[in-house]
Image 1 (spheres, helix red, strand yellow):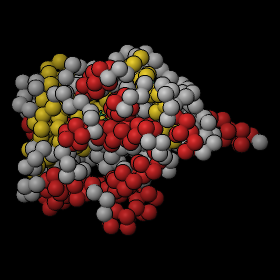
Image 2: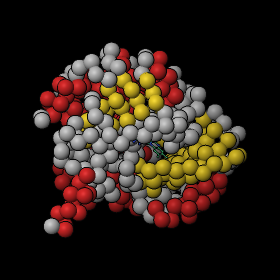
Image 3: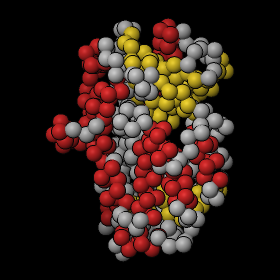
Image 4: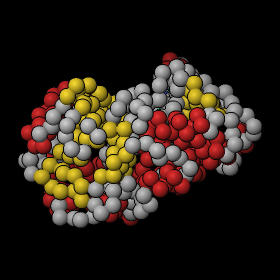
Length: 391
Ligand SMILES: Cc1cc2nc3c(=O)[nH]c(=O)nc-3n(C[C@H](O)[C@H](O)[C@H](O)COP(=O)(O)OP(=O)(O)OC[C@H]3O[C@@H](n4cnc5c(N)ncnc54)[C@H](O)[C@@H]3O)c2cc1C
């Protein structure tokens, strides 16, 4: 059956099942429900945002001229979560030299993730439920038979962010350290908002030594900015960056990190997850091909982020210092500068074939080619491979 036929099938009065109550799944649910569709969201865990538990994250505000909060409002999504607009922070190089990061308008919004009353996840959940979406917790879907969207998050680790959540008397702010001894090919970060903090090593290699990198990250922030942690709780998670040729799993659109839709450079995946959820919902509402939607709206940015990642991975500590000193230091509008890096350009296009040869997601595609496959996380291809090998 052609995908278009499947989409048209979905455009009926049938209930739409969504697997996963993360930002991508809830954004899809809200968009569909606002258009009058009946939606049931299945969440495997007992509460929303379970894997984040109060994590502080940055909702990036540099990839478009339009402010991300306005973007959410224009898309009809709730913005009544607690957020702190961040215009100024400090980045350090491996030699402890500080560089001011400044932007006249928010570079990103600090938000809380998880089941807390003021979190982004709770705001989206509240809106969805208010619109009549049925959310079933402790409901882990393995198959989706009828119309549906699959939004179950990352399934492989291309990067990990590990560290602590804690209470603190520190002032709100953000600090970053670019040092491979703390976060190989990534960055160490400290975020503080309203007496709560998150300190993490976000690493793109060297996962086996994560404990060592976390210890070093904590020590470095204690030395550089007087990190003060009360009641520290260990926390970590993975990120999956992978550009699929098609983001359909069988007949269903895949959104957010389940599709691999992420910012391969630094892991700012929330905004992309939300956008992909909205696009998938629109594709069902308008009987259009979801691949055409995200290819047009997201793929060039995803490809640019792969090129950026490969270049960043090659920098090393001296390269980060060069980047901070020559590219960031003294700039009064870092937001504009970052948009220049994130926006797809001729040099991204020119370097893409080279970058794609160098960047490999750890995710192995074991999904099958059956367009009628109903699996939420398809591994059918694995048994087919095994059979092929045996025969
Ligand atoms: C430690 C850490 C820090 C991060 N920091 C940032 C940041 O600062 N800025 C940023 O933009 N991004 C950040 N990210 C990335 C961002 O959190 C993700 O990109 C985003 O949450 C992806 O949303 P999603 O909806 O695709 O998946 P998720 O948020 O993972 O949601 C998927 C949901 O599906 C549920 N689920 C899984 N399997 C099933 C099933 N079979 N049936 C039903 N439900 C299921 C899961 O329980 C989960 O609730 C960070 C990620 C991590 C791990």
